[in-house]
Amino acid sequence: MVRIEHNFQAMGGPCCLRLDADDDAVAGVAIAAAVAEVTRLEKKYSRYLDESLTSQINRAAGAGIPVPIDQETSALLSYANTVWQESDGLFDLTSGVLRLAWDFKSGRCPDQLEIDALLPLVGWDLVQREQDNVYLPRAGMELDFGGCVKEYAADSAAMQLRRHGVASALVDLAGDMVALGTPQGNASGVSGWPIGIRHPVEKDKALAGVHLPEGGLASSGDYERCLHIDGKRYGHILHPRTGWPVQGLVAVSVLAEQCLVAGSSATIAMLKPAGEALDWLDNLGLPWLAIDADLNCHGSLAAS
Image (cartoon, rainbow, N blue to C red; front, side, top):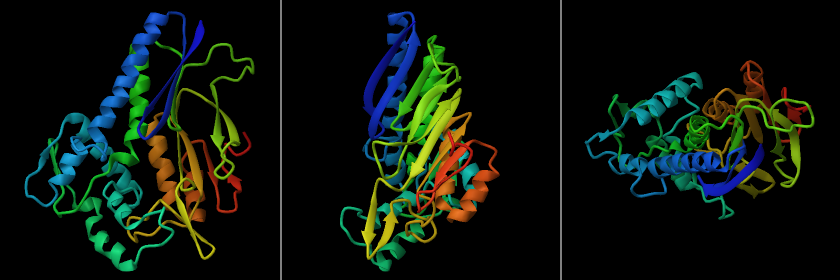
């Protein structure tokens, strides 16, 4: 049994597959299938690609003609609808359009008028959705699957590895992870894949070490892109109702059976005020780690 590592670029960042395998040929086929699955989902749902389904849906906004969708997309939209309801509208796949008002490289905040012009385009409740089609009724509206597709791709890639005979692996799509089985030769005696949760400020430092059991881990944070103006920090996570950056937690990581669930849970926590978010995470029933604005750690993983 040997450890095989395959690195590739997808979903806007560095990705890695780590497999324990005793057959190079089987491992090679499994890796190819997993990478192909991630590539397929990126081509299908990326808003950066003109031919993606997402771009087709967004181009048709306000044109009066619904866009046909398949069962996979319908299931993703149904999941997004459930999370929107459970988050009281905080998790909203239409809120990505707010990015048009914010240039985090500019060194300036947008005028309120710029934000006000975009707010009427935000609202999951406006989306007209049937089992086999979807339609955005207002010109300029957008769907952005970025809030869930990378986590969904991590789950899907892990499923491909399992289907191709891999019993022990770690899928890492730019920080969204799914573990299969138990890594071989784990000298610590602790089950699960050892991973580090990165410090939000000290980039080369791990804030916590976790042994990831079978399941997913996803992280959300606003430390990568932000503005500092007059002593105030503006992160890139925007509130769907105000259009302004949230002023809550700095970073959240959640463990769940599926990376998709972990990711949406972390996102919801980031969109809530810090105190409310900590209470919400505490009642979630899942292992979690949160970092507040003073870089204090909270949660069941904080002492890991």
